[in-house]
Image (cartoon, rainbow, N blue to C red):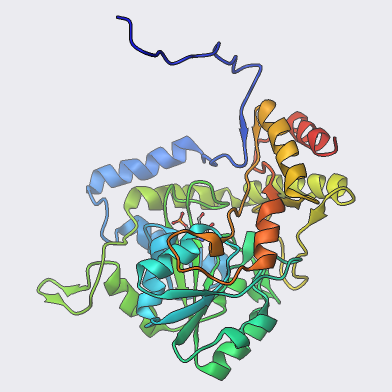
Amino acid sequence: MINITKTHLSDPIKLDKYEVINVTKTYLPDRTKLDKYIDKIYSTAWLTNNGQLVKELTARLEEYLGVQNLLLVSNGTLALQIAYKALGVSGQAITTPFSFVATTSSLVWEGIEPIFVDIDPKTFCIDPSKIEEAIKPETTAIVPVHVFGNACDVEKIEKIAQKYGLKTIYDGAHAFGVQYNGGSLLSYGDATILSFHATKLFHTIEGGAIIFKNKKDLEKAKLMINFGIAGPDSVTELGINAKMNEFQAAMGLCVLDEMDTILEQRAEIWSHYENVLKDHVQLQKRNSQCNNNYSYFPVLFESEGKLMEVKNAMNAAGINPRRYFYPSLDTLEYLEPHTPQTESRDIASRVMCLPLYPGLSINKIEEIIKILNM
Ligand SMILES: Cc1ncc(COP(=O)(O)O)c(C=O)c1O
């Protein structure tokens, strides 16, 4: 048959020669162990609804992270939405324009207007000195992000929140395991959320968690993630379905067992990048009070043009770094026009995260560095 057009297919890429390197690669833990958990699921036929593995993962994560009142949910976006609902956030919430789109879209989805406050161009986190001037009578919460696992100025933010009676919900999607001043960074605020998406440092395929300050908020959220059902014949809350299932929990339990290896390998790559690149590109200024969980390695170029030049050269070599975060969220088309957040727009136009994951070979790392220094 002769059609008007025919898709042009170039010669297939030879995979042995051109191994594709993405910004991250999902960590797959020991298969035998995972199989044992799956055998358990098969023997009980209990697949979801707060099963044994979800309970076990909850307890193990609370211990590993050094936190209390942790609730596992089906993903990080619903973790944000449930946290806003459980804490009664409404009207307007102050947030950062430099994040993954879910930080903003979750607010809009819940009918809360995001009010952007610009970032500190060095730390990439919300600039606390600009928060107070954005507070209005409609403001009920602050939603900052620990960008790339770098702690926000939590003390200043807490002080402002207390002064104006606002709730604080930290988007800690990148902050798994980060310690701050000797305790868990995740214990700050009325709630902190985590994402356990497959691309994250610790993952449950899809998944997330909310860590609440108060037990009563945890209890409310527990009902909310299960349709508001309090008992066999009783629905006491407006709810949704945001439960984590047993297969997700099984993956999490296996990945958790291998966190030491994951962190060790990431730390090695991260430090290698830092040593070689610190004099060539600008790096994120890290908060000295928190440790590094090596979740991302962002580099800042002198211009968007230079970024695109390097990105194109990497792509041609089968390496896919990611413009992350891009675009700045104050440019989202579905929002009412906002005052341009100039620092965030500038950083978003020049920042790129380099490939970073256990198993990334030294040859590839050297190739990435060579292209970067061209
Ligand atoms: C900063 C930030 N917030 C929220 C999310 C949403 O998490 P999830 O993908 O688990 O829904 C992500 C995910 O990439 C993220 O990076």
